[in-house]
Image 1 (cartoon, rainbow, N blue to C red):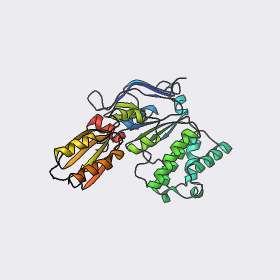
Image 2: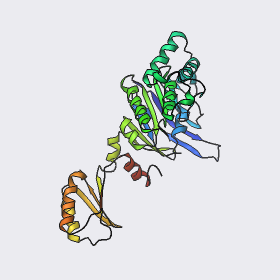
Image 3: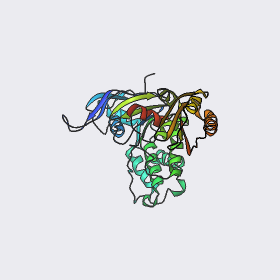
Image 4: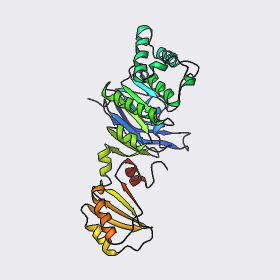
Length: 318
């Protein structure tokens, strides 16, 4: 079966020929029913990529195939299978939640019982039945986000593009949105292309992650595959301030099971180890026996943030 989303050498340059190249030669292959996250900092090219895939922006080069349709040459059929949930709230504040859904449903071509049934189903899905007849201007930011999601689901799309849907909302609303993404896959079998700069979201939601930076996908795979790139070692950081650390103690650290390296710099000992939390009690015992006071302990387990740092030399949120 062919991938439901496929791009080849997709690129976008603003104000050619001298303007910035926002997306460079992006190749995506996304299977039906997959949750695929584009993970990267602001300005990495995530929104530009989704805008090209949804037909809002004309690519400067390459092509995008959506459910078998070329978005450039057959845009109407391609758009019929897509639901787009933009980063910005796109609602009418003086209409109620239900009225907003009805308006956008009519734009999708829905009417009569089919429209009202779709509205009821969406309100149930986004958990806003009890507030559906209040004006959107009275909603919290999280509730507006959920209505925004509902609009993109009214026509039961096969593919959903979600562009940074949890930016600027409270933790409870964020949790509801993340649960909704998982339900779209598990209950409805939808394919979700999800953009975020929150590493923990990509790690929780995704079947696969594409790490994008400066318009280029620099790594791709499951979370496990990406973490393997940095060796799956934990970092144990022991703060010893400016104490004199006996060389024999460092040698003993190196003999602890799972420890692969020990470095001392700027009042800290950095120990790389497999299963760092298991090694930690032995390290503390050795330090105590050597008379070295440990003022703080941090265990950094490998995650997508560490992968991004490894690949780019800077933190994801910089």
